Length: 351
Image 1 (cartoon, rainbow, N blue to C red):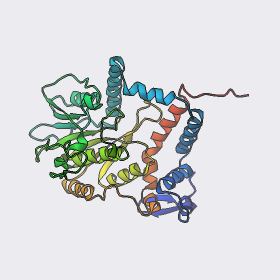
Image 2 (cartoon, rainbow, N blue to C red; image 1 turned 120 degrees about the vertical axis):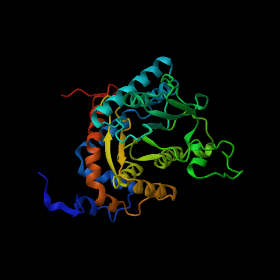
Image 3 (cartoon, rainbow, N blue to C red; image 1 turned 90 degrees about the horizontal axis):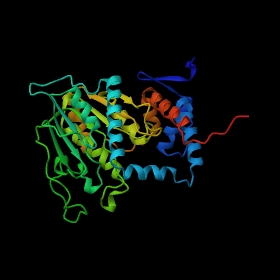
Image 4 (cartoon, rainbow, N blue to C red; image 1 turned 180 degrees about the vertical axis):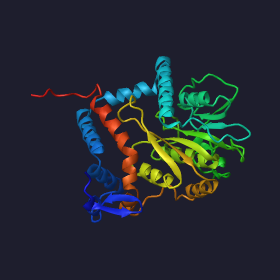
């Protein structure tokens, strides 16, 4: 039973006071403060962290994960088809749990889907099977630039454009690029009709190691890709629509901030498939509740306030700590169970 002596009410979220007070005089980084809070409060996260340390120690200097990355980067046709099938399975199971692919608020013009980083196309395949009359616009990094093969069969209701979404400067409000910019020639003209909007938007793109890009982008490419997808999604989402977003590590500072922000105006749910890789990323889905709130969040994102660093991370944890735990507990449990039973873990026999 939970000991109520250590609880304090912050709005509707009870937060363990003793687990926050020790951070105030500590020189930890915000990321470490979040991790230590979760280690204190969440047994599932504590177990996962211990298993991660074991794996880290076991594979120090080992080429196991390097070989895995090479297999993903240079997938043959058989591997690519297996990946496509896996993505469809994940999407099907996600839909069974959350109903995320069912478009409810259909307009007179029908329904529409936007897929930001489509290849190989598994998620879009399930979205269209759930909404066969939907019109879809999909972007995918060209294969010549390091993108994956598109395995979704051609369909008359799918418009596919091969491009890098982080280069859609005009669509993100930057029609003029300085000539001295390293990528000045690579930024693209608008790909959207200003009035174009979608009922379901899939933002599951992630940085590809084979992507041929300028060196200045290496350190920040993950943030660039994430913010580009979110900016475009919020600019072109119908009120009441749904977004599916791929995230990495629920406990990461950027993820916590994103969840904290969207939880204020949307119905947020986390999902992780039980049969994916132990450290594979979860996805989240949310449904914005009004056009006014959508406009406010678009402005915050473009003003640079959306993903800014918090001055006092303990304030975030007081307001959002309990909610973060409720969102992440099942994800950490799935990851810990998968890692504990992973075939590559060396186990010592008990005496």
